[in-house]
Image 1: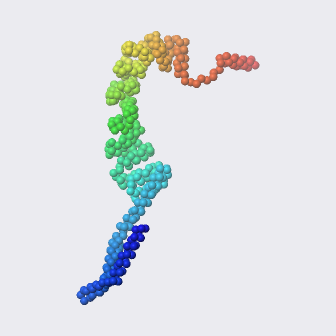
Image 2: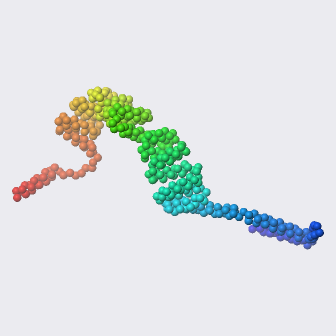
Image 3: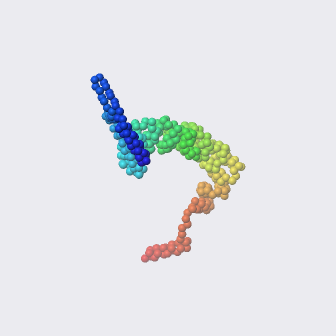
Length: 432
């Protein structure tokens, strides 16, 4: 306001000064050309020149604006469409977050072409279409996203994989992920999704090939990778015999199992659970002598109670030799309940019934196991010691039922009286 007032004062002062000069001396200007002359005062000439300059400037602006009206209109319309698209995009994203799928798809797809970031609109609209079960519309929107922003193939592909997995389309999602892996080989989320698809497809071979990259790029924690690795090789080991033809002989089966076992990482070949699975497969292949040899070697290298227990279940080539090998372990492991149970089982195979009973009772003294009670009961029944076998069986049942909630049972006397009353009633009925 102060500036306007100051400017007004300056204009008034300038006008007063000019007016004074015009009255004092209007000046004289003569312009002659050919036979024509123009006479005027200096001040009038200055006013005419000023008005002429303003008129010329205005005419030039009108000419250029009239010449390019379409471009100006286009710019105005584009700015207006951009503002409207921005508003629709915001409303569409809000609708998407609120689960209003139809509204989100409509707003986002309508504003995609005018949006500064059409990729966001198309991907979000595809997600909304998928949530409504409109698979064709979702695929078309993803294709539009590819056409609008070709360099965003990884982002678009990840969204496509997520949608395919939710549809249960495992094979197409695998193909998409393999393509994305070629485009972005170190993309950790792509590798994580690829791992999930391999697990759901039970493609254990593909997963074992992927594990080194998962470990190198730290896609998962080390304990998760170790568990995944164990699952993969365990499944591959168990499926080895299933892949062979039915008519394959025992030698062929053994060779296939041996080859698969040698392909395991060194750490897994010493894992107790993996060894047990390998032994089970050897037994299924009819190679118990090989299983006994493998177990003997593993136990010799590293003592393990579970493997010792399993050794007593395997029928090696020589029962006597197997028993002698197990006896040799007693020197370093005299207090092993698992070893005593194994010795008892091997003594049974060698028909050394008395020693079998002794070993199993020693095992129970060290650790009470249900399977030890069961084996001891079998031996005693075989020997005809029914009273003692019944006692052992009751002890075993008490051990297995130790966590049961006690319930009230009828007293023996009351049961006897009730039985006597029933017999008396039956007797009177028959007499009648």
